[in-house]
Amino acid sequence: QVQVEESGGRLVQAGGSLRLSCAASGRTASIYAMGWFRQAPGKEREFVSAIAWDGHSTYYADSVKGRFTISRDNAKNTEYLQMDSLKPEDTAVYYCAAARTYSGPLTRATSYFYWGQGTQVTVSS
Image 1: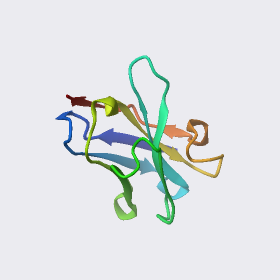
Image 2: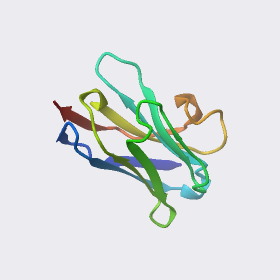
Image 3: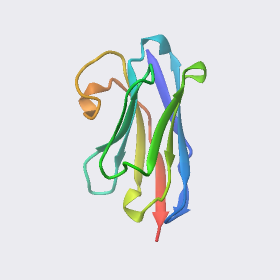
């Protein structure tokens, strides 16, 4: 079993920056990749970014490319999402997820087995 827990969400002004963290615990050696998804009110959960646990591959949604940066610290079993140039449309609950094996493209929520409870990011205009 793997547990993941997000932190770092808060209210920020448009144009500002925020860094989300996701700490993994348990059988972390089984983690294949980790990702971030978000869900705004009234919308479906959408892919934001993902990183292979060996750090060799990263993936971004077009809407965040060039503004968000995903990284990981294997020694701390933690992934990060650095969010810059935030826009009001980035407002959502952000979820951390972990994949334990290759189960499909990392841009799909169904490829992940473990999920956090989410952290609220609100960007004011």
